[in-house]
Length: 151
Ligand SMILES: [Zn+2]
Ligand SMILES: [Zn+2]
Image: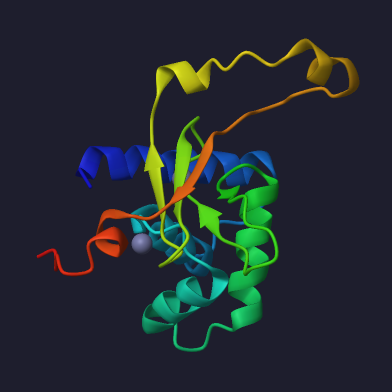
């Protein structure tokens, strides 16, 4: 990640915390930095393992609560996973997901047409749509070509 981009993300993070009276602690900063650097839509467990390297005394509970608080105030997004472990998304801008049903990886993709999906009338009648995301399930490149070991 470019340094400028990282700085502006951090600035954004600090502003959102202040807006919601959330103290910016070194641990919260570390959790935020970790998730922003992650491209894998991590679970609490993955996040805990990584943050622990920097803060050996941090508890699983703290990481879990912090991520849920971040999700509540719009710093991260909760990924649409039902039944499995919660996963978090540092990208709160409109984007869409590819879910690999084999390795459970989630990949981001952008598509302008999907961003402007037209909501059918019969849906609008009984439901107020706030956001929309297209989720495509399938097999990622690695899983559909197990012989191809990517570098
Ligand atoms: Zn896969
Ligand atoms: Zn995503």
